[in-house]
Length: 554
Image 1 (cartoon, rainbow, N blue to C red):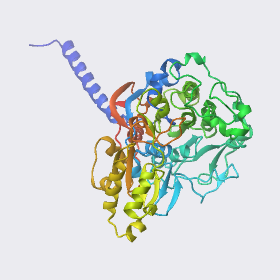
Image 2: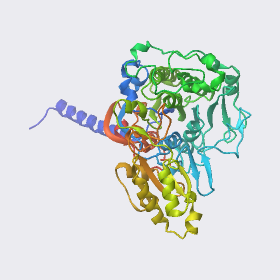
Image 3: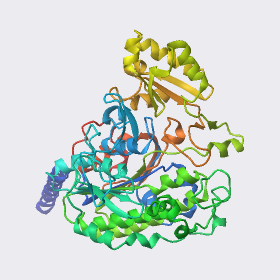
Image 4: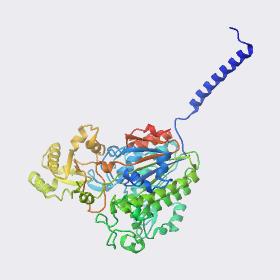
């Protein structure tokens, strides 16, 4: 068949066009970067946020905070801590290192340092001076953190051009996310000061913008009564306001709204009382936005990082309990703070130009006395050394209590010198003590250091304990209280266990490079840092054990 010249020319042109398109597409694919470089990453940790706070209070949230993140971002519904103890220090360290205490070494807020025979706090460091205050509140650094953080890796990747600033009411909520190389970490000093301070680890003097902010006494706007932001009768997701399961401020007879903070001020630590109210979160947002402006974060194409930890949710939970109207009001108001934060980021950095993740550092248990009053199995364990049965056992078996050096974070530390002097086999002592503790009614499981070191647990409680076990820092026996049982006061909630109410927390991603959607697949806290690393195209923190959550990324 012979085609007309015009038809042949047309076929040639179509062929050339298709070839050019194929080559152009290949070139586009070659030019496309396998990562997203937002101008700013904002990491948000909400202290003591259980996953169900997202769902329980959903109808009270506005459209611009949690709902914006869920609707336009990605929600991990089955997100868990995969280690214990579940506390603030280990939580922040694990979020930012992509590792567990077995690797990063932050095995508690406080722990017994068996090498130096002292009890230590996770970020205290007397080798540095306070900056912005005359007291010791600024003597802190990340020197006990054994590995790098996602913020460290960003600094290395950008040859120190990317800025890292961390903000929290608590020192550990700022120091650990900031990592070893942060430009700055700031935390709050209460009492009669009401200031944001830092450590000489980061700087020799507060920047002018921080000094100006402190001198402005901006925090004084929150020295005012605290009442529910919505009608208290609408808070049907929490228990009655006047109950026996909540702690009291000094000077109050009943834990009920409204709270006259000016009248309670002096008897409750001055500015420190604000920590236990939603105003502490408001102060955190205010200062974080000042940092955004003062440090010019997100102003160029080199990615910066702003780490924010909202601590008042934890203070309120400890004082009032997870079912209180005080906690519900704290979250309803936190949602407003998030909306305020996002609106400012839209304006200053640009919508679509920043990436946010939000999670928690641990969950919390409902007040056991409240649970037991509602026929749930729950109760209080008390101190292990306070148990006469345990003391009698030690006296009978080893001639006294000197064998025990320390008990903390549900771990027993043996005095190795006493072990040697008694010419005893350490493994046999561990097993003997484990058998004894397992017989106690309020303890459900017990494991030895030998088991932690010679097994590879892959699921359940022993898996969680092993991820929290650091060979150089952890104890000789690890025990697990029964579900619903805690060593704590009869009012307020706490945390720290390997139980699911302490491990299940939210994880939300939003913004540049993030897909819209959700997953019910299990994800774990150490997965956050490698996910952000993949997004940014930077190296993982050097102790990473987690894996990137592929569904999250575009």
